[in-house]
Length: 113
Image (cartoon, one colour):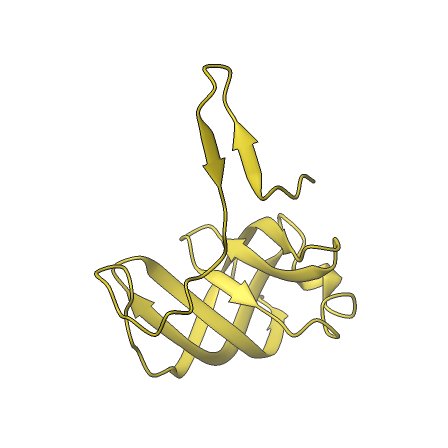
């Protein structure tokens, strides 16, 4: 795993990640959506980690991002490992960028075969 805030290409160009903008101004990339109850299912393709390497979620085969609280990642590792077929419930948003769900409950997806 690599955690980077700045990348410099071989041609000298630099990309800097300053994190989210907190100016309060909403631009074309800022969308305001109220989370709604969601149920998702699929196969985990990628585990997501926080800046200190802690397990924080996963990406499903349809591109959905699943997020879990920092304290829950380790306990849910078997569900958030690539190849796991899961069904999850929580509150999330869907917009032109994709779908993200904050997980409240998660289980093995038994119909995935």
